[in-house]
Image 1 (cartoon, rainbow, N blue to C red):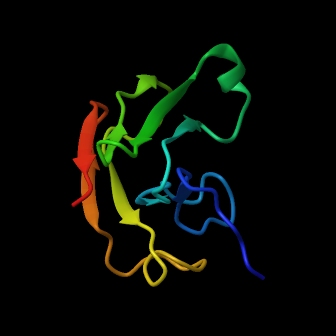
Image 2: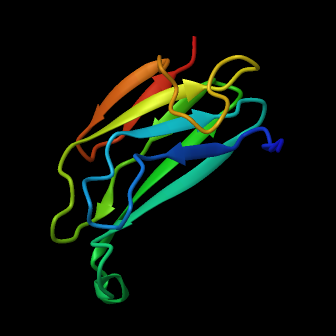
Length: 124
């Protein structure tokens, strides 16, 4: 089945999990569909309770700017027990023959080791 994705979309792909606490959700592949500005927010929490309703969660804003061809993985806001201090993002600039399908991309365009501070990546 074909899936049409709007320009500017940022689609995260994580590892396959059978249940929420099986293993850390890392690395995360971020597929960026260029052509327009876009944004996405990753919401993280403990995954096995309702502590997120009490403010125990974190968010990571991600913004694609088409004019400057830059992706910003913003500063993480919030915290919770068991939160990963470091995470890895595989950045994939989607094209007709790269970053397509449901499998992870073999060769990401950039690898970002993220520790909670803002990171800016320029597309060549």
